[in-house]
Length: 559
Image (cartoon, rainbow, N blue to C red):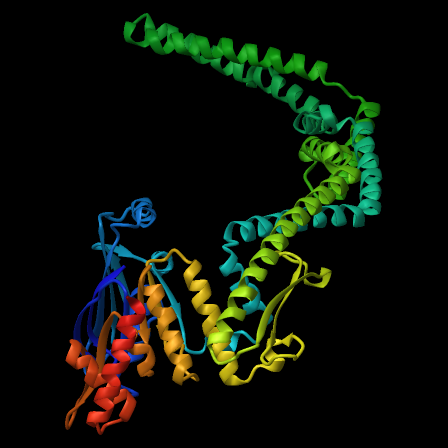
């Protein structure tokens, strides 16, 4: 539960330290004193969106610290451990908002993001606002409220996931059906293209060797004559050949080497060069004699290269890439002809997924129907004590294919009859504003009783009621306070008198400053505050006596 709240420079609050206790605590004060600001501060520290307007005028930042007792909440401690936060019996949440609208937060001293704050807050506090009755006019809100009352969280998740699986399977089947004709045409085209590539024998294609042979045959005359001419210049051109010139120089060098042995090494190198020239000339002569002139082979090569170049243009690739293209086309053909694209199996998978979703939706429908009966009985009973004697409330849960979706296939309507003998009609068409507020309050108190959260906050949910009805509302809230911590912002003395604890919020006005402070009221303070709520600013002995009487009745009702 919430044990301590420290607020600094938030809205019109300078600084506030507030200890909170189990049971029902009433927060009262004049209109505009800042009662709901405390609720806003709790919402902010647990993940509500920050705004620079929240920072008190003239301050550089607002700061809120909230402490929670987790001694009876092992699941929350497990969550803290899973999120790598310190997990003891106390949890301290801090939120800072700067004047430029930026914010930062921490949980037990470690930085936290807004998602973590909201997740933690959903495990600690349930907030009921003063305008919640307006949402009862919307069918989606009615469904959400019924599911919350029924505790359908896991069923809703299972139904949502089953719906998503069905939609994916159905789309795959539909897409496959739509592409059935296109797939047949594609298969025919792939078979034709693969056959065309196979006829061109691209599987064993060596484009580099093919182009090399073509270049050799296309230039056979030039190659042969060039090799022959080089052989003649190297060896056969009488005294002007390279061999003859080297031989003459070698002879003269050998004569000189007889006079100086140092010239022997150059002479040896010259001899090696002469031998290499002779071998090169012999090789060139043999190459020239062996050069092949094969016009037929050349014509075949040009025809084949033309075929391959045309196929490469068709497939928008280079000729050397045609083997890879063939492999890709074969892989696509195998996939299209494989079992994964079997239309019957896709249809079967879609139908099985739909059946699974319908089983989940039916389980959800049955849970909603049971919870709807319980909620109807509970609200009907509450209406008798909330000034609507003879009124009835029912939750109509009907299967409706037009409502089919991830949240099931139910059409949910809150039906009400506010007077005896009147037929049940949709809530939005029958209830007045005051009746709607009272029905909403009855629903909120019933759903709150189902929750396991340690702290419940009611922010002026009793607006629009008064008199004996208000006293009944206060009694219900006090009974909730016997099971868990209840904070109730109220302007009704009948509600405040039922509380176990009482906090007064006071606005302090000065010449150039407006601020808010809180006062934890003792017995006498409670009498004066209840009297103020009863009689306005002028408190008489009569209103004080009436206040004491109301507090006495509150004590007796809780005894």
